[in-house]
Amino acid sequence: MSIAPVLESMTSPVAFDNRYARLPERFFVRMNPTPVASPRLRALNAGLCRELGIDPDALPEQEWAQALAGNTLLPGAEPIAMAYAGHQFGHFVPQLGDGRALLLGEVVDPTGARRDIQLKGSGPTPFSRMGDGRAALGPVLREYLLSEAMHAMGIPTTRALAMVTTGEAVYREEPLPGAVLTRVARSHIRVGTFQYFAARGDHAAVRSLADHVIERHYPEAQGASSPYLALLESAAERQAELVARWMLVGFIHGVMNTDNMAVSGETIDYGPCAFMDTYHPGTVFSFIDQRGRYAFANQPEIAQWNLARLAETLLPLIDDDASRAIDRATQILEAFPARISTHWLAGMRSKLGLQTEEDSDLELVRELLDVMRKQEADFTLTFRHLSDLAAGAEVHTRVRSLFNHAQPFDVWLPCWQARVAREPDGAAERGARMRRANPAYIPRNHRVEQAIVAAVTEADFGPFEHLLGLVTQPFDEHPGEEAFMLPARPEERVHQTFCGT
Image 1 (cartoon, rainbow, N blue to C red):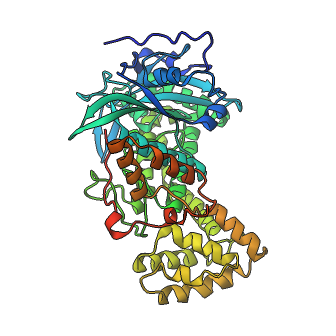
Image 2: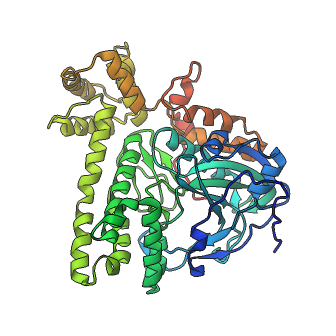
Image 3: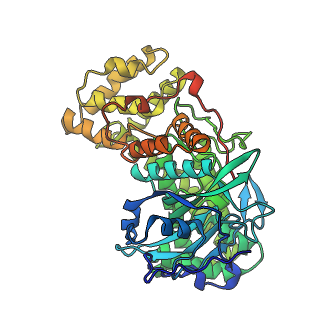
């Protein structure tokens, strides 16, 4: 295997400060990326660079391409493939790990936050399980678009720092152009990372990992009477808020395995994910989710199930008495549905322009969703048009047109209007607040696929760049771009998405 040389720049544009690589060697495998034939930088997220304290102009474009494809190493990088396990569709796999990704290292951004920088598609590792360790361009484009859109909507997520095409083909069912994604995360530690060591009975490693996570993500737990119980509770709170936010924008992760749940509370691993057009709780896009385990409405329950698997790994640390440890962890798990419901209802109030709380609000929301489901209304546009209606715009007909039969909506509408009339703010302020809670632009599946097809078949990245510009300003309407707000026409619909691994 070729060894990537260190970039021969006088100074590194990235100030690495690596801690995970200081953990015991059994946590990872040290190795270099596998160089590619002809790297070309297709996207560099200059805004994210600056957030990380990186000057995007510090290197010429071709040097960035070499470094972010893995052909050269930035000074200070210590590439490692992280070990983890995971439950995949409910079945435990004791060893997974980074099969096509390498953590280059960590940076401390100007706010003091620690962030991982990882190459995805950087070549085979000991965890590749007979895979080639590469990534096809299509899945890289999807992750770039969706992760940056999620960030723009205020949803905790990994970020896309760069995309490089490799000049090489990867072989799936057919040859496809290859690419490498540079991904940024608060960390890449997963529930499955804990499971990897717990399954081996390596309690010392579980403790070291838990201490690392507490220091990095939940320092407030250090002063708790039971730090590891506090870790579980803090992780549960972050997951409750995260999944509630998914539900509020109609996002379906598609593959909520425990190796795809980050303990930091970020959305991670954008595989067969998508946003709903027509609202239905049972919506599934993932081709591999044949039984609907990870359907839209199941996501809160699956998050709780995944947290239970995390809790199992922490039990020996929570209390020496196994029965007492189970009781204490169970209390946190049983409280999870209420946590997520609280976040979801608060978000729904914002989407409907409600600042105050009334006992009837939950029923008002449920009635709207029931009408949307039965009348096949578009999830995103329903709330966006209600925002316009709240502001006093003459769009009553536009909202009604989203429903197959408008009469049930006409019954609900006066109830909502009477409710918002009891709010203290005026129509203009209310409408503005609602527009900040209800995006106009999401990366609709058919638009993402159009961008992918153009890039993969014609090397045309214009549609990708155009869509990226819209979904990273999701709350602002852009004149002339109304078509990108609309759901797919019947002939444009994309019914399934794929992992692309």
